[in-house]
Image (cartoon, rainbow, N blue to C red; front, side, top):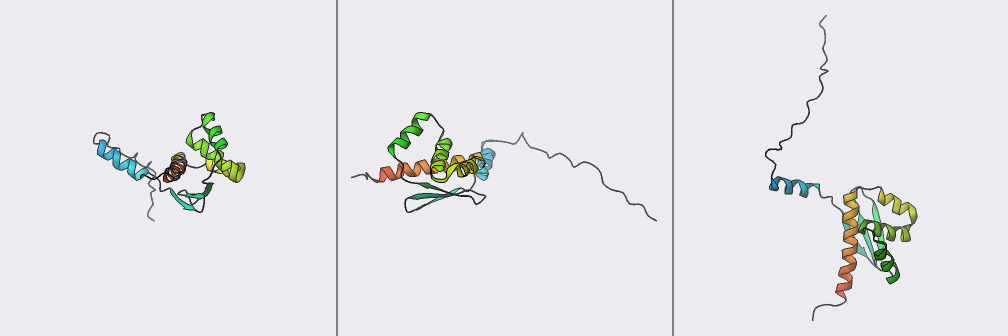
Length: 127
């Protein structure tokens, strides 16, 4: 009867090439790491989709008092976006958003506030 042997050797640690790493390699790696966070406009709402499929809706009309309150608070754009979500969707939505990938949340918050800025600028087209 022939004996069997198991390969119980630990997997080899991956090898990393730090010596060949350069600016071009870093730029390619960064581009590959950017998540595909989407945002569309439906009526007066911004609808965002994170890479895991979570859909987030936020109004495109905020009161001046709400904007002043967020600006005075010194909150980051992500935390300001969570304030907006909390107002429209409650604590559960804001907390769920807060448990998502930080980069994706930052991208969505940035897209939202840039969109608000673009809407405001569209009201005053160049003559």
